Length: 166
Figure 1 (cartoon, rainbow, N blue to C red):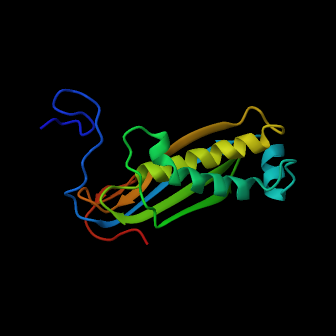
Figure 2 (cartoon, rainbow, N blue to C red; figure 1 turned 90 degrees about the vertical axis):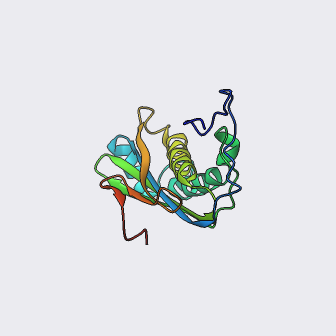
């Protein structure tokens, strides 16, 4: 069997067959941030961005993006998500977005969580670019995942034998 799961024995791209896998609870948490000037941060925090409520629009955009991940990322399975949440936190000269995606299914939701974060941050950029065109999106990454054959993993500590994501 080929070691790369998205290539068949002839080296052609293929979607992984998850038909024989057991359905399990799967959760993924991803995070990223957008750095910006103090004026843009204050405008977002104060709800003073001319285009409207930046965080509300970014939250909806991120959730919608998670639901459309299979249309955006080649070979991703379309998933029936149970939930997607996106939270924001102001950190110094940046705004952090954290997404949590969950389902009970045969494949993980890591790509959905990371897509949610990326699109939420892109939406922040789009809505606030009139205030700061030099914003920088960075650090979009998986923070934690649970479920499936590979078990529970957290960025700061690798594999976790016991415990889980609340």
